[in-house]
Amino acid sequence: MDSLITAAARALAAGDPLGALKRVALRDDPPALALRGIAMAQLGDLVRARTLVRRAARAFGAKEAVARARCIVAEAEIALVSRDLRWPAHGLETARATLEAHGDAVNAAHAEYLQVRRLLLIGRLDEAERLLATLDARPLPPTLKAAHELVVAGIAMRRVRTTAARAALERALHAARQARIPALTAEVSGAFAVLAAPVARLVAKGDEKLVQLADVEALLASKALVIDEARRVIRTQRTIVSLTRRPVLFAIARALAAAWPGDVSRDAIVAEAFGATRADESHRARLRVEIARLRRALRPLADISATTRGFTIRARGGREIVVLARPIDAEHPGVLALLADGESWSSSALALALGSSQRSVQRALESLAAAGTVQALGRGRSRRWMTPLIPGFATTLLLPAPLPID
Image (cartoon, rainbow, N blue to C red; front, side, top):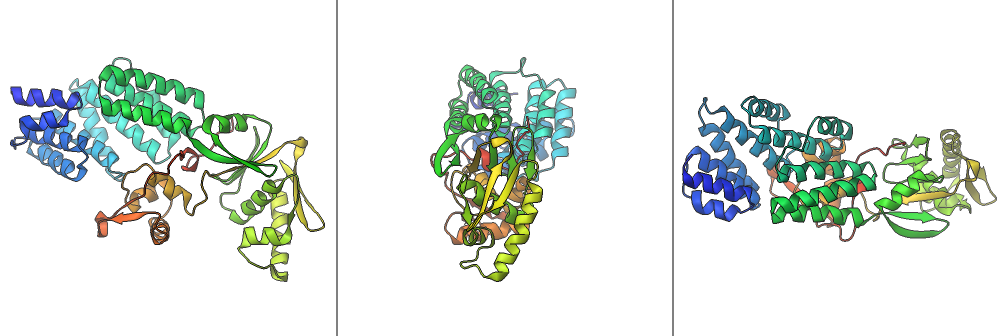
């Protein structure tokens, strides 16, 4: 490796992409192409970066397996940042094995962290935790130690474990400062801001307030009966009743809980659950059927009683009843939660992350675009979707991951 390549690599490791480009911008040999690609990725030109890294991978000969594997890892990271979640994970695993076999432990670990980050992004938390548990960050350089702790914090936030998340972010900040890379320090600071931002609205006894993730954790550990709007579950400390596939029942339960300890009129429940502006006899008959179904579903947790004008709910054991509502009222909150990271997403990547069909996601995007909430970039298969960040709110509770029982 010549001196210019060495200097460019050191500049990239220090977070100085312009310094790297000054040394290799006019060169087309494979190492220079790879370094140019990484530099362009750091500068935000992901399309150009991916092209350069692919050219470098093809240009390296068959005897340069380690260099080719490093290019595959770099391309996988670019794909992850650009939210192309359908890149072949088996190719990254093959590259990781090659790097490990040739003694490149740092880049092999980097490949594994990319796998964990992808699993976290698409909501497969159990798999992400299992893979992360196999990794030992202690012998790694500060940049990868920071990456490790950011993943630990991300999983903890999705699991609503604020103490563990804060401790991981403190370790990540220490590692980022050791690495002396401003972009990495800024990423950790952004994660701290998410931890401190409101994540939900708490509705109880007619009052409403914004709450942080720590408040949600305390609520889930309390004796209260919680109606969780983000996941459409009704839960106590030990029991969860999922109404994810029964939106009408959940809408009725939410209306009853929001009015607790008072009652809700039949007309108001019909409007909330069925979308009818005026209740007729057919709506009232359907309401009686749905109330009976809801009673059966909530039998372990609560009783529903008829009143003169409607219905009321009462939790077993005299528990308080609260609604954990989304921080903002909007259609298709899961799509908005993923787009709120400020990155451009394809509809296929959104479908993969949400566990939904691509056509359903496309309909949601078209509806949000018509309302001016999101915007499309590009055409055809290259089309990407973006939305501005939701100011002042974290989207932890909008993302598709189940809440733990314990």
